[in-house]
Length: 378
Ligand code: NAD
Ligand code: GLY
Image 1 (cartoon, rainbow, N blue to C red):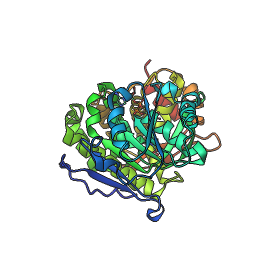
Image 2 (cartoon, protein in one colour):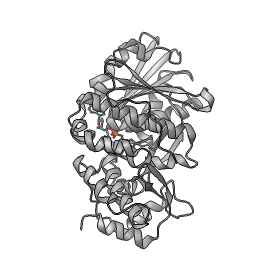
Image 3 (cartoon, rainbow, N blue to C red):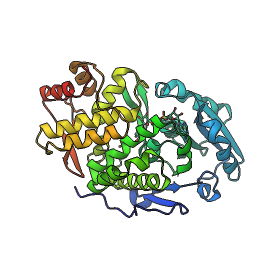
Image 4 (cartoon, protein in one colour):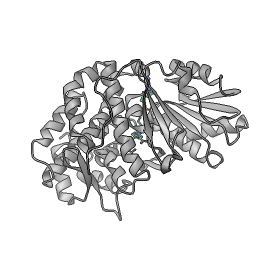
């Protein structure tokens, strides 16, 4: 696989809105990702969206008080009625009960099948709102307004929507694309540092899977990202979205290539499910999972030995965990057998095959157990 092409300057202008197009079905379901400062209050961010008698902003009890009224004010210029619903905050609420609150609000207000949903929040709100939009009256339009770094670089883009099941992460869901993604970098100002670091895990992911140059850029600019330097964040968000657009444009429904976006996720989802949702943040679990998957890449002879310390050092510098919880190898393996990439109970890992190149691989259980022994707390 070739490195994802880049149209991005490492020094983007902060005054201009950066646009990354997502091309699907020869343009029929194409949409734009808007990236920039002050986008929430810019009327142009909200123009040209699907018309309807009503819009519904879905947010949570943390994000709504910060940003909901500003979004509502903009939407009132386009929709005669703008409703709001606030879900409980947290990964452990990414379930049917919370999603039903969206349907309760839609049905109580007799919202029709043109109603546009706006997901205002992080990946949990985005994934749940997208799934609700996919199935309410068999599908209504929705718009992603991501407010975490993780959501801006990954979850708001590409149309994966889901809720968790107690036995497996993101197991109930649909592919359903938004009509637009509006990523206002200024919303990251209020993000807790732990959440910013969790988002950096997904930023780091894009380097080894698709762009060796971007990996080197992250290594050089990690301190600026941790300090929330706007120009560094703008470049990181745009480059990640470009790579994701390039992948999703070729393989929307994960028949092959799209699986590379799950680097670190097979181990990571096992950590999240094994500990109970919300114990570790998604990005933290993915970070630790990337260390494990890097080790497996080395053990299978796909990467030179120095790749593992390079990844471990970067992840540690980003304030992310490099040692997994002690669940026991058997429990890890059982959890990974229900991963969506598993086939007939055989676990398949996304491994790095060269800097900027990834692919799917099986691995013997005893080798995976050695990796776990090396990278879990003792
Ligand atoms: P999250 O949605 O739980 O948000 C993290 C925390 O930050 C929450 O407490 C939230 O209320 C708070 N928050 C959000 N924006 C804020 C802001 N601007 N200021 C202050 N606080 C703010 O977590 P996340 O990391 O954004 O997303 C993780 C979820 O995304 C997981 O469920 C994961 O499975 C999913 N995900 C989906 C995809 C996809 O392709 N659909 C990709 C990656 C991750
Ligand atoms: N975050 C994985 C994907 O979108 O495919």
